[in-house]
Length: 140
Image 1 (tube, helix red, strand yellow):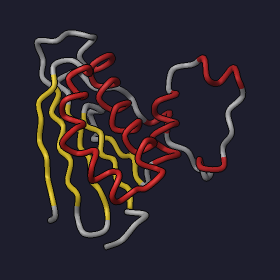
Image 2 (cartoon, one colour):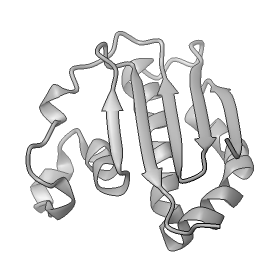
Image 3 (cartoon, helix red, strand yellow):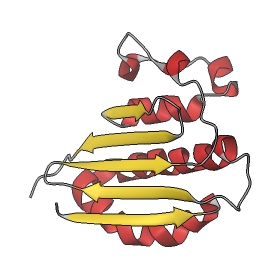
Image 4 (tube, one colour):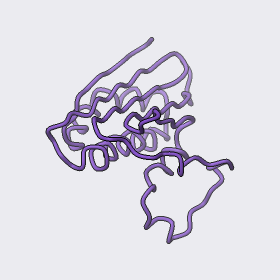
């Protein structure tokens, strides 16, 4: 394992300080896609806070980021009741999906972003843990 980072977050704005620790690795391994990968991580944190914790700040969200030899693995845990992620499973290649303007008004935009950007998006059975993975664009 190259580098790992763990943080507890009570509000998504705290991600700004944490980002300073992992952003150099995003820049190194993902080049121009670093902003998209960062947006996916941010979206997972915002979803955990907004939907999992109902915007309450007395529950910590756990963020774990591991930069491995060939990919980044991100886990976001919230202490909420979870959600039914099954409607967001897609049988066709979501990377080819292009939204209509009306699609952007519905809930689930963040999940679509994460599906398009990351190689893997998974949830645990309960729906309160998000796993994101993406292979590096740039290899050492």
